[in-house]
Length: 175
Ligand SMILES: [Zn+2]
Image 1 (cartoon, rainbow, N blue to C red):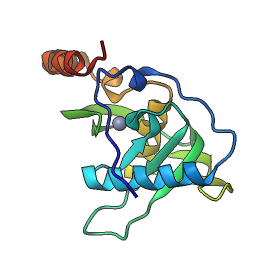
Image 2 (image 1 turned 45 degrees about the vertical axis):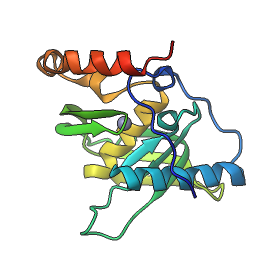
Image 3 (image 1 turned 90 degrees about the vertical axis):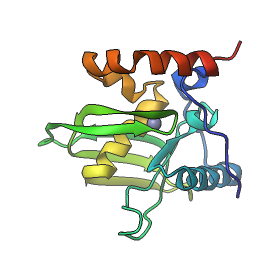
Image 4 (image 1 turned 90 degrees about the horizontal axis):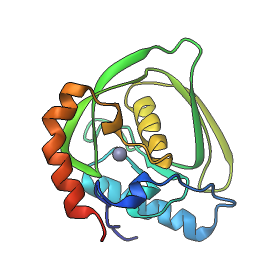
């Protein structure tokens, strides 16, 4: 197990579309464990592979409330998601381990399904994912498309955070 370096806004890998994973190997399963450890250490509820510098379709999520619920780690290779038929749009505050100190309201679906390959190579499907889990699935899958939650923020939030984001990008952009 090892802690991985979390990439910060401005690094180009965060804007890349990630590649599908042809097969779950022991190396990839070990990488997913390291991602979980890194996520817990940073106090996050989700982490996508681009955030540790790899443009592959892998996300880890644990939407359980720390100190209140048992840990519920999910490792998802090649995840796909969609809204449930009765899903509606809801607004909730979000942050991201790759965009420290910025929190803002983001509109997402309140109820989604997700399909993925787990760390054993088995196909999994989960329905009616709501609350934190549903939101994390959408946020982390966005990372695999090179999308960030700040892309969805309001124009007010955008102008409020503009200089913070510009400074962050400048500091972390590779020459
Ligand atoms: Zn994020």
